[in-house]
Image (cartoon, rainbow, N blue to C red):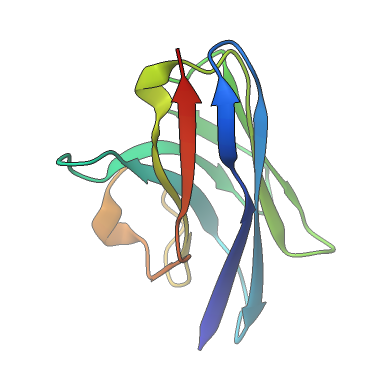
Length: 125
């Protein structure tokens, strides 16, 4: 059993910044890839960014590249998402996710085995 507990998020004006955190605990023998997804009302859950836990390789959706930064703290088993230059279209519920049995830097939702509870991020214009 793996638990992902998210924090951060909230309301910010366009052009502002927010940082999301996701703490992983439980039966994590090895972590391969962790990622962030988001879901706006009436939309599919979409990929935001992913990071290969040990090597630190990253992968971003084109819509956030250059504005968002994914990072991790190995010692704390914590994933971060620094969001800068936020736009109203970034408004969504943001979820962290973890792959437990793969090592695939991918945007495919089905490759992730466990999900956080999700937290609302609202960007006002």
